[in-house]
Picture (cartoon, helix red, strand yellow):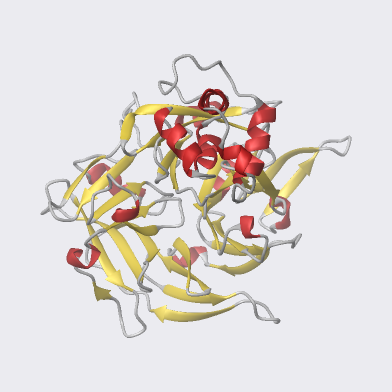
Length: 429
């Protein structure tokens, strides 16, 4: 198993046939009593041949397998962090052939241990989202792919060439040579490293029903979506460049999609209308006294939708503070940290979430676990931060302290990397 440090005697790589077999088993309950009665040595041998996501799926099948997985060092099923920082450096140069990729996964309860997890050939150039246990990946042609690392299921989405802002430039023989987007000429595999800023799902594709994927893309001023089974992207809205505003985040809440812009405009979207998507302004844009780094929309277990802003604050020790408000048609209402007792927020490229800590032992309540999203419109403020930027951070609302939640390797050149390289993913098993 590629869970380095968990099982020292495990063989290198993974057995694909075993991985496929037990991924299928993990899709449903353990229906045969014979499975749970397997000898412990066989169960441990199987675990040695599974990578972390499949091992977590394996552990969810029955109590016997869960106990064996715990004994084998498989971490509990909580929020995981996926990092592709090393891979991003390689994609700076066009490659004639994409190979299978290995990324690092970490668990908050043991941040010093990294797990190697491989992805199928050609499906991972970058990542722009995580929802319901699924990742939204950019493939070698800069198209999007839904990928469930726990079951290895994969669903391709319509191609990037659907968008009018992307033009294919062909060779003399008729094959595609590169893309032209926003006035920039890009290799087929490099366009996707910056073209998509955020993607969220309305529901899990694992349920086999309807779901919709909404994306923020093209320098954060395009909003598009596609429904399950559709072959074309639909553009919901574009923001004029002259407005200087950009989409900052999107979320699915109460049966509708919501978006928020850098200027604070919150809109509710109905994408099920026969005549096309419609929108309703929930909160108007307004001027803010201090520079805003990021904005996120966070659905809560009790039915509220929160707006969370990271703000430059010279009076704070780290130079940054987080403001939390309840999104309300009558105006955003500030939320006290005490309203988040026994809960933690997870913000970033993922579908932002508010999780009860009782379900995930080891998490700190009244804390924001934060991965930097795309923020090209506000990057001019980053050099003014005393605590730096990047990596996986944790903001303690009680202490008003912003620090690293996971080990962080700074750029040796001291530069600011605007490309996100981490995403939270919570297994949905």
